[in-house]
Amino acid sequence: MITNDPMLKNNTDAGFANNPVDDEIDLRELFSAIWQGKRIIIATTFVFTLASIFYALSLPNIYKSEVLLAPISQDSGLKIPGQLGGLAALAGVNLGTAGGDKTGLALEVLKSREFIGRFITQHDLFIPVMAAEGWNRADNSLVIDADSYDVATKQWVREVKPPFQPKPSLLETHEELLELLSVSQDKESGMVKLSIQHYSPYIAQQWASWLVQAINNEMRQRDLTEAKNSIAYLTDQLEKTNIADMRTMLFSLIEEQTKTLMLANVREEYVFKTVDPAVVAEKKDKPARALICILGVMLGGMLSILVVLVRYFSNKESGNKI
View 1 (cartoon, rainbow, N blue to C red):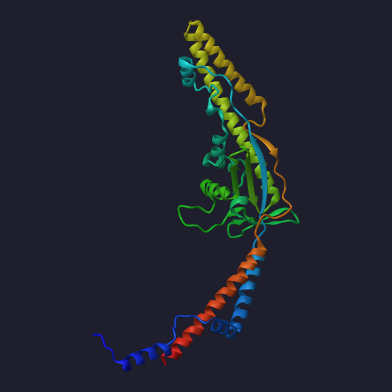
View 2: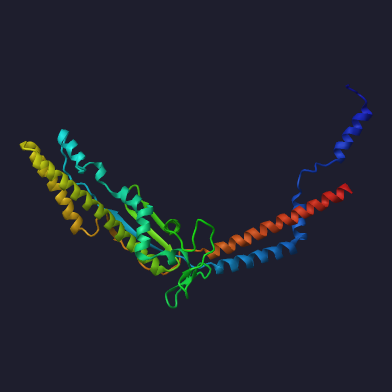
């Protein structure tokens, strides 16, 4: 129903004029609320600052050792087309195709459970990976977590739930070691960076060097085994045929595999050539203690301001309702 009563219209206009918008926040009121709660803000920020400082100081230093590697081409250069190439493939012989680049395979092998498991067992890395919690610079010794390993009795004392055992398994240690290991390859240059992080800079440097040596030896042994098997197969085929062209091709393939054997036996850096070797780090890689303290101060300040504002507007709303 539409009404033209001027009295009703005036009362309505007066009501809107006298009823300010409650949803709008006055900045002066906001700063006033913060100022009133300044003691809470200062105290809370101070507590968070102290907590962040103590937390940052409690964290042990972690050092990183990095090695720069250049992939070595494995392309033999021999290309044989047609049926001869098919026979070579049957023999497991690489004829210079794109598959000759073993860099990708080597990087995957480097992170595999089997390779890392053998690496851990060979160098007995269970304690430095699973029980270390720091490093003593004075005598260059690891700080061992007493809740994990008892140094006096040389026994693992971890409290774990089945199926885990007090002594870490290879799978557990493999996963922990992968957290310390970083491997990346530059897509443009093809250069590979391998780095190890650890509490001890000496251990980080040693492991990085060991890993490069181990992956080169692993790929060398794989190629030696493959080449020997290929030569045995080709020699057997050579004895079964009297076709001149076929015998010529088989001799060429045997020559290639013999070349592979020679390179594998004389080349120490078989897949990766060290461009910049791993060194003992002099400066820690982490933690960033200054950043932790700054974040602690900011977190304490923001939380305390939020608490002050919530309390202020809650009390104000309660007062208005009363």
